[in-house]
Image 1 (cartoon, rainbow, N blue to C red):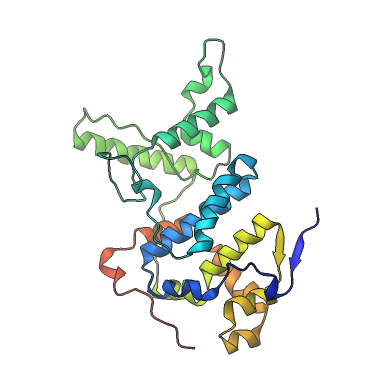
Image 2: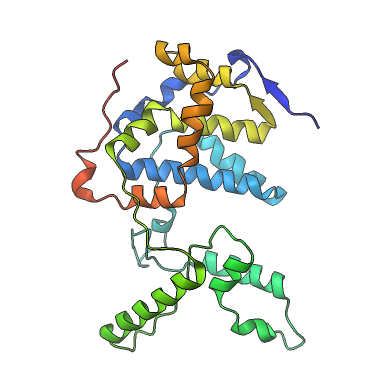
Length: 269
């Protein structure tokens, strides 16, 4: 099937309106992280190319189309009543949903023997499974903590394990610093509506020409209009590619004392 090309702004969907994104001017780093992570999850589902996900994708995208800046509560806070409410993105409880998905994936990969067990794979670490199967969760290491031990022993054992698992996975101790310029560019480059148009084009099997993106997203900027399509290829796309999991985690964990001072302000035209 040939990909349909979107060569005119009039060919964009009726729901798209750049004015719907004006609220991003007051987004905090946490709000940016939640919205970017929400869209990253939808694009990940699209990349799986699995028909069983299509209803979930369309349902989530419908909410974006209706109100692209609506409040999004982080998924890890959507826990059962009286459960552990932990807002960190670095350390958080292993959910039953993830445990089920993980267990199903491991069983499908290795298969069960006649006794219903994994056999030799039973001693195969989940970290090695992530690494060998090139999963998007390769930076995650599930742990089991024996709370019958003392805090001192647990912390010492964790430090030893952390050193081993970093060496094994190759994931280094890195710190991503979110700057005021990073936050300004999220707004200035119209990243949220840009991603939403990418999602729409993937769902519909269309390709949006760069000059259409320029007109739809930056019609109010004379300087960008003059620069033209190169602004997408040389500026917007490289910054968009920077928005990986590490960047989103840094947004989530941006210290509270900076959140007020780093709120976005309108960019002068």
